[in-house]
Amino acid sequence: MLCQSASELENLVEMAKPIAKEGKVADYIPALSKVDGELLSVSLFYPDGCSYTAGDGNLILTLQSISKVITLALALMDRGEDYVFERVGQEPTGDPFNSIAKLETINPSKPLNPMINAGALAITSMIGGKNGTERINRILHFIHELTGNCDLTYNSEVARSEFDTSHLNRALCYFMKQSSIINEDVEELMELYSKQCAIEMDCLSLAKMGCVFANNGIDPSSGRQLIPADISRICKTFMVTCGMYNASGEFAIKVGIPAKSGVSGGIMGAIPGKCGIGIFGAALDEKGNSLAGVKLLELMSRKYSLSMF
Image 1 (cartoon, rainbow, N blue to C red):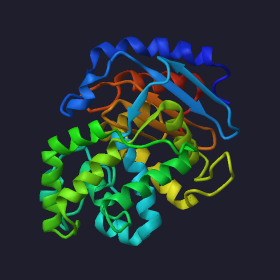
Image 2: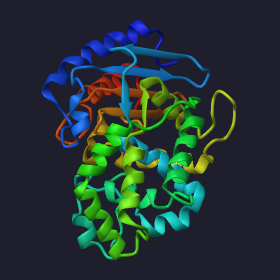
Image 3: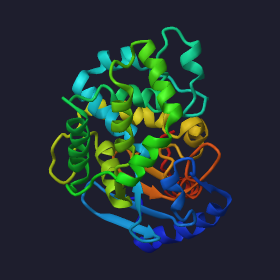
């Protein structure tokens, strides 16, 4: 067990927290701009059910890009590897997460990986269901299984705020529709994607999801294989190579664990065979990652020798 007490974790939080003052809360999604950027919270969840939480209480965050890992797993379960990776690549990119540049220059014109916005939109379009309601309910049901919490849902205010302001994501969708990567109504896909990103939970639920991935797709509480082991492996690999936007290489050197961040300030970590981590610190660096959250993971990695490398 990498942490022996909540007080031990609390000390690390207090060491990481001051750096939040140097970051900035995401304000291009208006509903996210209301959050206090100096708050920091972390939870660890272990396969034996033991957990620790430290920091500023039971903070609630929206998943944002962390949801890309969840929908990737679900799309792979729905469609299979061949179908998914014919349409979305498997390579890292040094471009920002919302860049359209590679879609314009690569032939065939498909997103480089599922963790950038273009790839995530294509992945969400692969989620099975007769309509948007059925599809978001399938995503929510999957998250309910991963967290053991059936009350989780999406924040309607954040979803609407994202839907109304996501003009660049619409551009990505129309570009991919021209290339037949996406074959559905763009506004319907945008509504589904906005709701997916606005799913909210606390750090402990985030850590529980991370623990399922760390445990090769097995729910530690029930012993059920919620995600096939090979799909869990694929998701963790993308988390390592692409999960922290275009800072993934630096993060791999400094921290060295599978992790996925979101512009709400959340980070989900999955330390293979050990535990899941959930972090929330809304102040972001210039790449879109939680400034204090990344610092906390650096401190944890050094203290507990977490790096896979």
